[in-house]
Length: 83
Image (cartoon, rainbow, N blue to C red; front, side, top):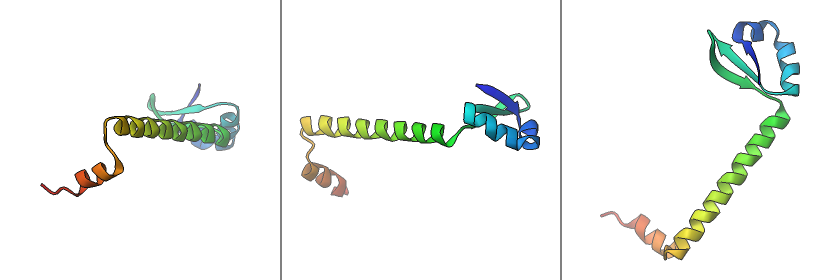
């Protein structure tokens, strides 16, 4: 991943955006990473992957809960119990 310091990123913003279209660019301040600039395509791909992973995890948890007897009715009962 290419890197650039924050002041250089500010001064050469157009170049930063062009570089991000080719690959992620790490932005640092005083040598410490503070952000990453990436293309819209990269962002959409990451966002899609995260949502797919979340959906798969939720499905697996739902199946495991059902296998252990946690039905929607049992869940509702647990959630409404104020004791």
